[in-house]
Length: 321
Ligand SMILES: Cc1cc2nc3c(=O)[nH]c(=O)nc-3n(C[C@H](O)[C@H](O)[C@H](O)COP(=O)(O)OP(=O)(O)OC[C@H]3O[C@@H](n4cnc5c(N)ncnc54)[C@H](O)[C@@H]3O)c2cc1C
Image (cartoon, rainbow, N blue to C red; front, side):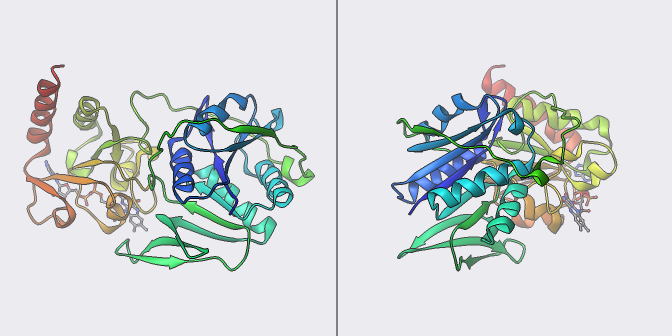
């Protein structure tokens, strides 16, 4: 069964989320897993995809694809999928990927299952697993026709390097008039040290219990000591204490790091749905009845201003830094 994975990049790196989806496609046992990279000057990215098991990488390298806009990508993908008769198209979630997947579903009148946490093969069918009812159950979802399009939740799969090489094939870039009417007027790159919240193995998140924006240094220092990223609740983002890009939850990002440390966070359901699939959840809260303790693996009842700096000190001492 032919599978195509949309490989998104930032600069000269393919996103970890895309590579994770590629590894999942390979693990499903399809002999025919291809990736597609689109942009300008993106040819060298094919090698990264080959390392994660792609046997073929389609390359659409064109100045008109330089801006990360969805419609030109839909044009290229729709043509490629029709020409090659591709049966399954997989995306790792991101703002761009979600737009492209939705546009592609509309263009090809194809079924799109989104927010999937997994994909399994049952006989000759694919079954998607979608978390529902505040992530308390997994619903089986399927497709009635081909191509089937799937959009996976961030962090669902880790990339697995298997080595190997891939054939590359250039793809025709022919754009519809209506696809070129949007123009990117500005693009800002957030400057920051350490991993992004989507890629981090460790997230230290701060909530209103920190008491003020100036106290975010506490979580920043702990995150730095652990080589992790900083997350935030909507309450603090709405209050202007921390940027929206770090918001975890229903209206923010869904993350699944190996370790999630929640500092001064009550554990509202809207926050929980964004982080509950983390490997180990540690909560530091002064209220022993805070809801976050109900779904934490480890809980510390205490004041973040006392506990967090001590924890940072201990981590630094252990690492000898
Ligand atoms: C439609 C909708 C969508 C939403 N989407 C999101 C979302 O995406 N993400 C999100 O996070 N929220 C979201 N919310 C908001 C959510 O309901 C909560 O209001 C929010 O998560 C609470 O943030 P918080 O835990 O920082 O603050 P609070 O609920 O005020 O909790 C602060 C916690 O800090 C503790 N605390 C106080 N002082 C200290 C101290 N010194 N030391 C230790 N602990 C202390 C308190 O005991 C308390 O438990 C959404 C709400 C709605 C209605």
